[in-house]
Amino acid sequence: MAKLDLGRLPGYTGPALLTKGTKSPPWSAEVIARLSGALPQARTHSLEGAGHIPHVTHPDDYARLVTGFIEEHRQPS
Image 1 (spheres, rainbow, N blue to C red):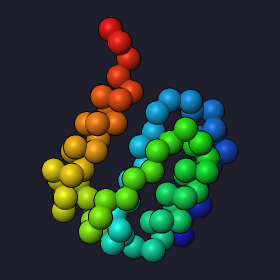
Image 2: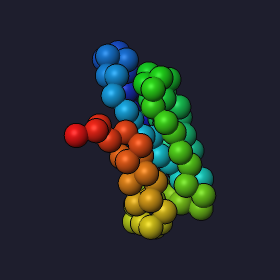
Image 3: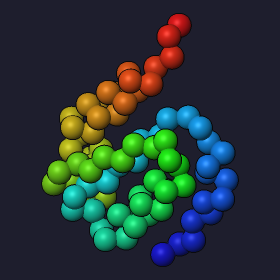
Image 4: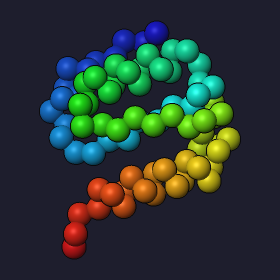
């Protein structure tokens, strides 16, 4: 597995959405867990039945998830 430089991530305080599919490769869950640990404000979501590219295999579910996340974190204008 490639080395992840997690040292600077805790300085990011904005919203973050981490996604994975329930059929993603095993290494994917480890990467998401490490990123989630470095970004305590991040939300992690698993897409049921999706693999490593859920935006391709489950585009409607992925779009709803991302759109909802953006709406939830939208700053009032």
